[in-house]
Image 1: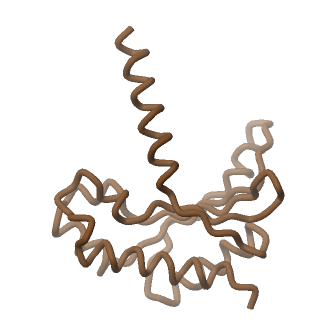
Image 2 (image 1 turned 90 degrees about the horizontal axis):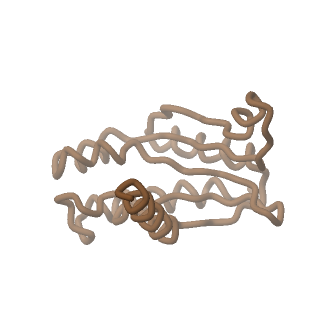
Length: 148
């Protein structure tokens, strides 16, 4: 019974976290959107840590899911500032943005805003680092979803 209650609480908290994520449509394919996001992040001085093709992973086990790629990246200046405020921010960093094809075939970008990433840490929602991380995510995803 304890496991059922714990699983239920975890599922509810995951649902809440999902609702707080930011979604932005892209006129480009998943691959093109992630390529542009990677270029924008690199151009802004970020380090790319991983590019994970979830659809390819599904294929490797004989399954099929819509196109979905996760980009994991970070900027040591921003990340270090967050971790100076609360070292536990390292559990939420580096940043992650998912590009995926939705049920209508539209590419979407999805990420968690900084105030959600740092919730429960000693980083107030109105801290300068929260504003900077959100600003960076907005600028980078704007570049990634532009048709230019």
